[in-house]
Amino acid sequence: MPGVVIVGAQWGDEGKGKATDVLGSRVDYVVKFNGGNNAGHTVVIGDQKFALHLLPSGILTPDVTPVIGNGVVVDISVLFSEIDALLERGVDPSKLLISNAAHVIAPYARTLDNVTERFLGKRKIGTTGRGIGPAYADKINRLGIRMGDLFDEQVLRDKIEGSLEQKNHLLVKVYNRRAISVDEVADELLQYRERLAPMVTDTSLVLNQALDRGETVLFEGGQATMLDVDHGTYPFVTSSNATAGGASTGSGVGPTRIDSVIGIVKAYTTRVGEGPMPTELFDENGEFLARVGHEYGTTTGRPRRCGWYDAVIARYASRINGLTDLVLTKLDVLTGLEEIPVCVAYDVNGTRYEELPQDQADFAAATPIYEYLPGWTEDISAAREFSDLPQTAQDYVLALEKISNCRVSAIGVGPGRDEIIVNHDLLHARGE
Image (cartoon, rainbow, N blue to C red; front, side, top):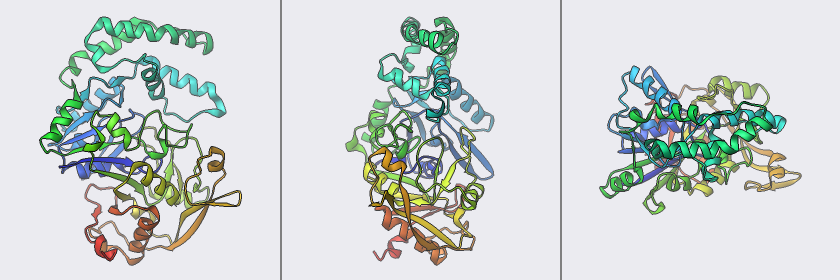
């Protein structure tokens, strides 16, 4: 059985949580391999809505073992807030495993995140202020605290002291903030040690042994391709590798064990935070997408910037991730539009770009070149087969598949867990 990676193919918020949850019913392990509580998944089950930020979506499926991999940075207080909220709603999170090599978001990371953003002013990145970037910076600078360190108090205190020696100078002398003591950080982290003990383990070993047994492992990416620290719209990116390659480094499972890579795309485009977005709309169409699509961040509540589908981004995501399939979400949001523009290329100062410009200034100056497809007015939320869709909706999906250079294997037609088409009959629609 396969190792399967799910990644966002735009700027995040594409509906990865729903896709992971649907696929999670067919797998044994669901692994979060990057990011932290700076992004969220919303999963609707029946009349219940679950907003997950740090926990893998697979935690909602009883027979799945959810795993937080070594590539994740963990805010322990948020972790247990989410766990306790699930317990109150009758969800059993006791199978959760956490890598002993996952890094901890210390309290000073959150402080530095917020003061740094304010200090940057108009050059701010648009972070969530949850300490993600500073925690990853400590990891790279070899000043980080890992989950396993919590079980040796002297090692923990030594690491906190080494990290604060530098940070307190910055906080006091540059940002005019008070110094943070070793004791207050250690006391906050150590209070969770006993509760964490049954969860923390060598998850790389666990996952590889599961694959050896023929079990299925699903790797769930946080954020998305265009927010990847290497391959996204740098510097307006997250601090981790949100692309498919991050699944291996963030879990300790080699790339030869991954069989398929599924990209999640909305039927239009959204973005949260700063940075260029070529198809962004500032008119009633943008308001329509935001209103009908309920485009507000799961974690931050911030309104999302909305625009038409960007095939240049989709082609780039297909190439960077080696996508084998696309899951197209929120097709239902487009219902009622007479005509739907789709960006097929960019115009940059009179030059046509079929692929993503690598120069930051060129991308910021990109103007979308649109093709226009007919819309539909029929309610599609009850569609469960591709043939149930109106012909113009079918044509829209097939057009996106062609210009995105990747087959569409599932379509979201509503927010519910069961409001999805798994496209077995797309083979027939393609003439295959």
